[in-house]
Structures are given as structure tokens and as C-alpha cells.
Amino acid sequence: MKSPLYIFVSFILIISCTARSPISNRYVSKKKNIEHLIKLGNLNWEKRVDVKSAKLSKHFLSKAIELDPNNPETVALFSRSCYFNGRFIDYDKPKFADSLFIEGFTESWRFITSSKEFQTGFQSIQGDSIAKTIAGIERLPLEFLPATYWWAENFTSYLMTKPVLKRLENREIIETVLHRILSIDPGYNFHGANRIFGSFYAKLPGVNLDQSKNNFEKSILGEPNFMTSYTAKAQYFYTKNGDRDSFVKDLQFVLNAEPTKIPEASPENLFEQELAKILLSKKESLFE
Image (cartoon, rainbow, N blue to C red):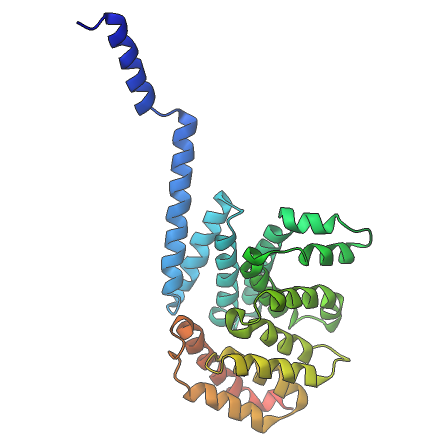
């Protein structure tokens, strides 16, 4: 027969194994909450062709980041959702679009600059803040590519409508980021770094327009079925060099294209077709 002491000890062990401390319970609850928010963000992102879902995706991802600010995948997708909503959903509301771009580049920049890798580079040299920032960017590894890329998309989209001095002041940092992306994965987001270069250089004074043209051509050659390259080229390059015929030709190409040739980019291509209509409707004012 088992002694009362044995029974008592066994009882205590069972209780200790099955019961969780309040701290442990809070940790599990928080973890599950984060996972649930990320799941909702991802599910709505997959349905982003619907305006409500695109906005909900951003909402749920922002809540997940509040609870876990250092998840690289969540930060990158949040920044991407900010860009998507700013470029497509609130395109005709510049102040709203700007606020979305600001959210996107602010969150991704916070994540990048607070990382150990960036700080190692930043602290490794003497010099001004720009030189130290460049050193930090050059240390960023592969896993930082998505957040870094969507920082560039949001930041340059924001700067496109600002005084030229703002673009000139940030040129060196933007070029460093884009060259870093190209060194890691030049095909990322359908050769997106070249597309950003093409847009950005078209809006910089003193830059030969061939640099803009060549980058757009690389982006289109790399993935001819991604429509953003054509609409961006029309919006920034053709309006800058005054080529009205090519402006119309490329936008008509977008309108007549099959948007589902890249299944994962079908929502973007569908919205680019809407942007093409808007740009064509503004043709006269854009070429005054």
C-alpha cells in the first residue's frame, strides 16, 4: 500500500504539471493572439483585390506588430500593404496615400535600423550620419530584403510628389538601398529595384534620362507581364521626355493585357489597369 506521503507528493507533481502560472498563461495567450492576427492579415492579403480586404489586411498586421514588432515577415507584409493601399486604394486622395506611405516606410525603417546587423555597420565607422547609415545598410543580410525593399517602395512613392530638394537630400540613401537589393536579388518583386530606379531618376534633376529608361527596360525585360513597370514608365519617364505616343501605347498595352499571367500578381495587375485608365484620362494635362 502506498504511503500518504507518496500520494501527497504525486498529487503536487500532477498539479504543478497541469497548472500554469499567470505569467505563462499570459505568454501563451499573447502568442496565440499574435498568430491569429497574422493569420487574419495574411488571409485578407490574399483577397486584396477586394478593397475592404486590402484595408483589413493592413489593420490586422498593424495590430500584430504592436504585440511583436520584430517579426521580419509581418513587418515586410505590413509595409507592402501600406504601399498597396496607398498606390491603388487611395490613389485619388494624395493626403491619405501619403499617410499610408509614411506608415510603411516608418515601420520598416524602425525594424531595419534597430537590428543588430544594421547597428554593427552603423557603429563600425566614423563619420556623419549618412555615411554611418550607408555602412549599416551594406551589412543587411538576405532576410532583411523584403522589409528593405518595401521601405524603398513606400519612401520613393512618398517623395515623388514632394519638392525636388527632398529627393536630392535622400538620393544617396535610396541609391544605397536599391544597390543592396540588386546585389542580393535583382529579380525581387519582378525586378522592382530597377523599376524604382527608373521612376526615381526620372524625377531627379541633372540625371541623364537614359538612366531612367535603361532601368525601366531592365524591369520590363525581366518580367514583361508585370504591369506596374509600364504604368510607372508612362507616368514618370514618358511625361518627362514628352513622348505622348509611347505614353498612350504603353498604357493601352496595360489595358489590353491579361492580368492573370502572373497569378500571384493578379491583384496588382488589375489595379494597374485602373491606373492606366486614370493616366490616359489626364493625358492632356500631363503633356501641357
